[in-house]
Length: 206
Ligand code: FOL
Image (cartoon, rainbow, N blue to C red; front, side, top):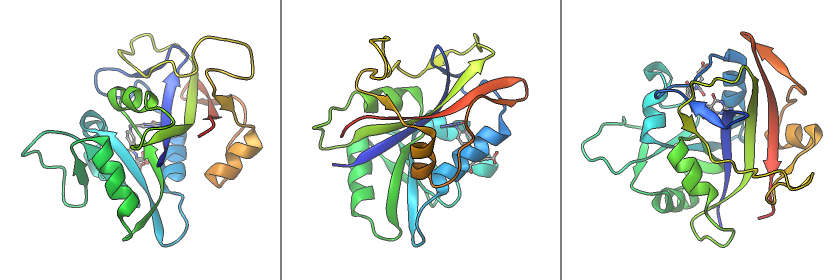
């Protein structure tokens, strides 16, 4: 079974977007995203899997995202995503291709959005032959509240049912998080352009 790591920046009410774009401008957070998704052993690459809207939201000069295998899930015909982009009709076909490819071999697969793909993937059961999301790299945007968000990620952590277990999700310690991503992740509340946020890793048994 293929494991997927979901990576997302979301407000406390799970807002992730506003009219097709990110609601904030956080260069350091974006470079964290780049570093995490690029970090693979030599000779291998990570894959970034996304829906068409997310592809369209990436500035043209940055796409396809460099040093990563770019996969777009889309059923559109005659839509040009560019030479080096793998387009698949559904997640099952994308994951199968990523599992079988060897040039380059795929190290980790990151699900980078958007809302539709995030919710579809979070619903896949542990027993799914397609994939299972066993990690969420969540950048929690604490303040301001960005009330103008009109795109949301499902509330995967669910209701407070008593720490430290949320719907089967457990938060990794800062040490465990840095070890998994492969570099020292800044701990505690970060501030950039007047926005406060925190880097978190959530894990569930696979
Ligand atoms: N996860 C996190 N933590 N933060 C995000 O901003 C984020 N964004 C998406 C998915 N997961 C995320 C989807 N949106 C780029 C733009 C939008 C986007 C994802 C990536 C992008 O242009 N990335 C470039 C970096 C460009 C730069 O240096 O500013 C890249 O190479 O990754």
